[in-house]
Image: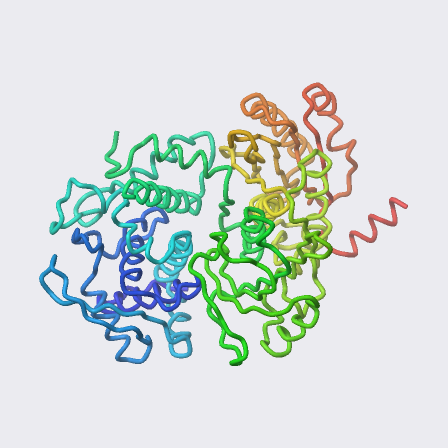
Amino acid sequence: MTNHPLHSTLKMQSRAIMILEAACKAGINPLPAEVFHNIAYFSNLLAPVYGSKIMDGKVLRLKEGPYYPDLQNQLDWLVLCGLVSISNLKYLYLEEIKNWRLFANYAINREKTTKIVYQLNQWKDESLNLEFIKKITLALTELSNSEITNSNKFDATYADKSTDFGNVIDYGEWVEGNPSLNAIKLMEKHFSGYQISDDAKLNFYVRHLYHQIQKGRTSDE
Amino acid sequence: MNNIGAWFPEEILNTVEKEFVEKPIFDSAVPDVDKFIAYTLFELRKLNPEKLGTAIFILHPERPILEEQYVMSSSKLFNSGRISFNNIVSFVNLTFTRGNYYETDLSDPDKEFELIINKHKMGSLPTILLDKVDDKYSIRIYPEGLSSDKEAIFKLEKEILELEAIHDAVENLYRSSLITPTANESANLKLWADPAKFYPYKNIEKSIQGRLHSYFSANFGCNFLVLPEITTAGGRLDLLLISKSSEGGRQINHALLELKALRSFSSSGGTNYQNNTQLEWIDKGMRQALEYKNAHNPYHSILCCFDMSNKNKTDDFWFGKTKDFSAEHNIHQWRWRIYSSAENKRKSEIKIS
């Protein structure tokens, strides 16, 4: 296994493949675009729990939830390359961003990506990233697809009203730490008498997110 | 306090306290197949028995491509209680949260097993059969798939955790996975760096903990809490075996387990541990167990020693000096001999007889 720094475009392509691969292994296949971007968000937000580097430490706060245009472009490129298949394609106009956005379901073409995934696993950093993304994606399957899509509305960081909609949330680009990591530190501190594994921290985070969604739903009704 | 954004501290702590004794949370020391078994049993036990009949669960998160006659349904809410697990063959993910399935008559599961092996070509995938016969349930586990002879039978109901059951759990693990390098290999467990030289592999206690965790979770619905590591040469692991009380969901501390491998060498072979040092580990382990026992008040406290030393010694040798301490504080001392080869095991058995 070697260290191999990837070019940013290639990094985003490999990130998109990792998310689709992880989703497939977790049983979310095909993967709706909205779920894809939420997994991308949590893969950035919670990467430090596993000591992984954050690929993108900022995200625009939108009512529609996290959306990474550059990552989407690379995903679209993977579709053109035949590495990813697309279904249920539609364009919707979003008033919030005053623009059209593509919505679709994506599925990895395993026959064509097996070698790519194998190669990513040969590079130390990418292998660790893939392992982490698999864990967060599997943990998120405790939520339904629509709950994952709406999870940002209840997330410690994304739902934090100190950043208005339309502004950038910085959770690692220029600032140290983020509310989500602070929440995890609080869990650790409370149980300082025990050793809490990284997997447990991640799962507790998602389960609290789940409880917040349930609570939010009840109060809306 | 640091900013925790849209969340509230009390709510976070409520969740964590609740989740500690709810659904199992495993770390990487637990093999995937063991996680699959434990999560599946956890979810099935949660469901209304009226929703359960005979059903097959195969670890295959992706939707399989089968012949047209199999009408596949998928569910994003697989564990929500909406699906009746009766006369269905399901392809599920590791945590039993997503799955695809088709309906079929499972009055004779062997017929379906034949199809799964020969037609679907899925005989090597971990499979679980929930079997209902005369209103009684049993759970048959095929960790290496239906093509393999390996089978384990579990009860749908959680078993009661007595001291004897804890001993049986470790004994079962010992017989099936720890006793010799051959058993280690078939269980995909690495205990020896170099068995011929009695060099143990590193972090053995952690691997044993992983296997015990999934076993206790599957059989008894218990979780492990790992207590702060106290550095001893060669390592030691202190665990609290917990579950949820049926009244009020509070945490029950069933047992304190101290796992300790008795090594003659470090994993690189660079250090040779003499008997005096090994006996000191046991003494320190017992004193640490007492400290944790007083702090956590478990029903049972046990020092579990896995003897990987290069000479055969008796329980009297290992536990003689701490015998009185053990009796006074009711801390049990158990030992399992881990052989570096099948030949060593045979020789040892001949001596005993």
